[in-house]
Length: 483
Ligand code: HEC
Ligand code: HEC
Image (tube, rainbow, N blue to C red; front, side, top):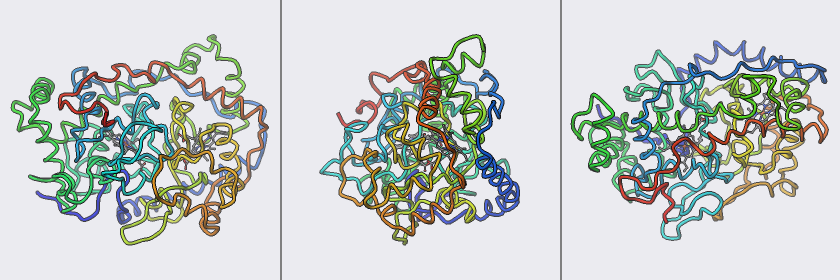
């Protein structure tokens, strides 16, 4: 069946209507959520506790991850670095998720389609200027093959949900295809549809044109066009036949096969469970680097970080309004004119979720800056000081504020500070924050927390297990840097 829709559903698509099914679901959970928020408010209010408040997580084990077939991961590696999946054949997944930048892109808000280069050096191409920045900071991809990651994106708009025929709840709801192995695979379907990220604009290429006409699934839809492109390259055809039993001929390759392979690659390449902290969890007689132990005691004790950054990957996979400053285009619906990003509320339609974003995993976090969902901070001490007292912090991002210099933005002729210039917008973000009473830590304690975060750096995961392929089967520039 062909799927028509006028909205686009990439990472930085125009807004979709709230998902009403999910609203219903969330209402059921609201009491639990309120209890939790109160518990956190209370816990910030009771102040210093001497010992570890929360137990340390159990060590990470093999059975926490989806199994990966090596040949499938190699196929996924090639696709991840190959710009063939973008409308104009000029940008790859790796452009925004590059191992040089710890699987992010080293800037606050990236430039997608229409950019040239990688990381902070990326620039708009004068012949094909990006229309806007990508509205959110590109997240790192560590440990996404772990089974507990059942909610993806800063606002959780893709979620494992067994009642849906596809097995997932996504902005496409009933029209989502089935055939995805995992939520990580389902995620891959979206960036390729976003005009600003990978598809391109208007009628400049076949994929952009299909997206513009609302042709996504079915023959001649955007996913079909991309699958055909890949199938037409002999090396891909041969590899797909070798990896998947259900593929005997190139014309049987579907986009779900492409996304399944990419997911296996991500799961294998950036699994991160060999940091100094992991070594310590497996054997407490192993010493943590200097300062890290004091930081760990704060993290799981007095500083209460583990109230949200809990478990083996330092995330509870839930959503909280932490008043991280907003910059860039925001997420406005098609006919709205504002630069707000209300986060989780855009998914649930519930005002209790206003400005809430998912608790990020903190694996390798020292390497993934700038930090915050819009990349507001490039310095970790500063980020944490603000994270502990967000209401005060947000005023330092006001018009004549002192903290805007922490952002890293490739030049583009846009107004990035509309939301923080507006006192009402700042007040709304402040009102929503769950941190009602700041946590008082001195600079030495914040520095210890940073030392602890450093012990989550994992050299093996940071370099990747397979690395960057020297060439990709399309013959296009590896990683889509336009070189
Ligand atoms: C133009 C930059 C860009 C490109 C290209 C891009 N991404 Fe992303 N990616 C992002 C941003 C930004 C987000 C966060 C979006 C949000 O949360 O709303 C994201 C989110 C993700 C996530 C979710 C991570 C999490 O923890 O929630 C995964 C997985 C991912 N991207 C994989 C991919 C894959 C695979 C491709 C290629 C098919 C790709 N990305 C292409 C920028 C990009
Ligand atoms: C009430 C829940 C909560 C508590 C408590 C909390 N965090 Fe967070 N943390 C979050 C959320 C939610 C975000 C994402 C905020 C955003 O970007 O909008 C975040 C973001 C971060 C980031 C940035 C990650 C990135 O990739 O951008 C770091 C680092 C961090 N927290 C460390 C800590 C530390 C250290 C503590 C303890 C001092 C702590 N957090 C306490 C919920 C919490």
